[in-house]
Amino acid sequence: MSDVTERGLQLFAEIMGEERAEQMRLGIQSTGFGAAIGKLATDYAFGSVWARDGLERKQRSLVVIGVLIAQRQILELKNHIRIGITNGLTVREIEEALIQTLPYVGFPAVASATTAIVEVLRELGLDTQTQTAEERGML
Image (cartoon, rainbow, N blue to C red; front, side):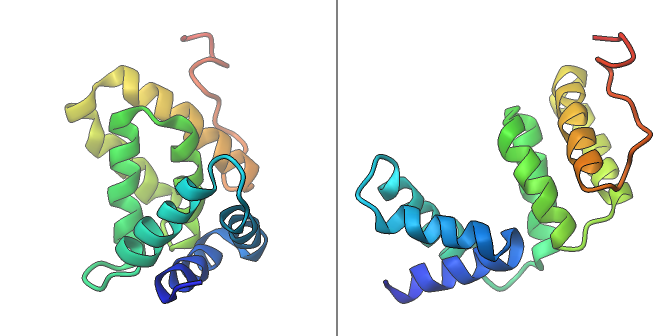
């Protein structure tokens, strides 16, 4: 594997865990469907962009979270909430990022993102009290 691939896998392991990094490694070493996409993600997103100097990982997480909220990419947002927590984001900072996106993306996008974020916070044991809008009968 190239140096950029190894750097990408190392960074991926640091923010997503060794087990997921090993799954990524096995996936990009295979010849199956999606292997090339996984390699591009490893090399470009993690080995090149996430590995750059200039921003701390916590700051990079905030940027990515904001973009994913705007794009309504809920599954990827869940992954990046987990990554953000690993990178040092607090629940309050995540909520403030959500609030910051509101004037730019609107209430429907923020409502969808809020549900996804609450689900991840529950999964991580960081907020077991908050109900989603759906659970409150609002959506």
